Amino acid sequence: MSFSKCVGPLDFDDRRHDHRLTPVDLTDPLAHRTAHRLRDAGRVGDLVGGQRLERLVAAVRGIARRRNVALVGSTHEVLVEGRAKRGDLLQGRTRRNKVALFAGPDAWIGGYRDVRFTGTTGSTFTALPLGCVQGGQGGELAVVG
Image (cartoon, rainbow, N blue to C red):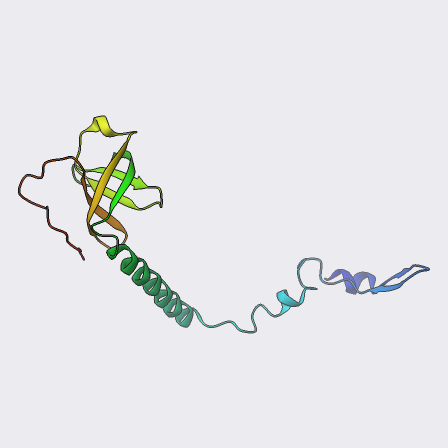
């Protein structure tokens, strides 16, 4: 049972202002707010909402991919964070939070290295540490995926 049904409207008599307050259901503390009452007014079903979310994610990934493809061939300073989860590569991160994977010794972990982006999957870059002699493979620029 709601509070207003038990008590009825409350009157607050103030000499400067005449306030009348009708309490709302106390089990729903936001029921008096217009936004709360309208929250379901423009709601779409789960199927439509899921489809819209998929389109939004695809659009964001497409924009990120185009921006990252434009960075292939550029040089960046990275902080070598550690070994990548897959493969025998190191993982580094630029000042702009771009992740790069490249070959190198564990001694580089915790330090800074200059690398050249050689490819991208759309979100992660492959890179070549500068100053390294490339052994005949992987020297060309590539966009993967």
